[in-house]
Image (cartoon, rainbow, N blue to C red; front, side):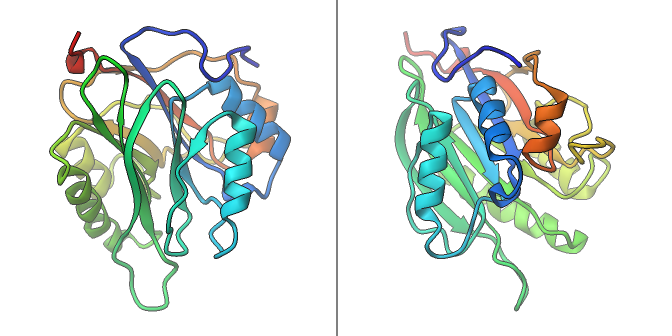
Length: 239
């Protein structure tokens, strides 16, 4: 396991972004905390956090455990949110709804405008798209429109429930550009499918950090593998 901790020194123009489906914190809590602290993300895009109406305290406690800040707010019974590190200024944040069919599980996004000191802001968004193929593209278009309304560079990530050959993945890769590594993300126990990804605006390059994450801890933490990029925001520098 890497010895990195939240807030550890890194390139002054680098923002570490991770996307992670945590399966409602039902698996190895200690292993999950260790994995996230080893990643040391500045932006943690989360899917499948507990979503029942009184679960906010559980998410806030989890944020404390991993050394991040959670903005809270109304979540509309959705299981998607994000957290940030103290390296970033959190300018605003919200949760929004994605279109779903009647009686389907609520789906939505967590979105925040953040700023690395000395840089212009960017928008970060986390999403968990439908299991139903025909619903994913409309959801992605709503997500992209909501993020684009800020008229800022953006980074979007999440569990797409779709592999790179799918139309929704290809749509996001065309409208933005794919910055996460070409590696399987599901399942954590036997990785065979790549259904989690991160995309960013043109001009925001990224690399994949090589972290010494324990395969045993990853398998115990949840059923997805985390997706991690170091986003180069030097193009946003104002210094």
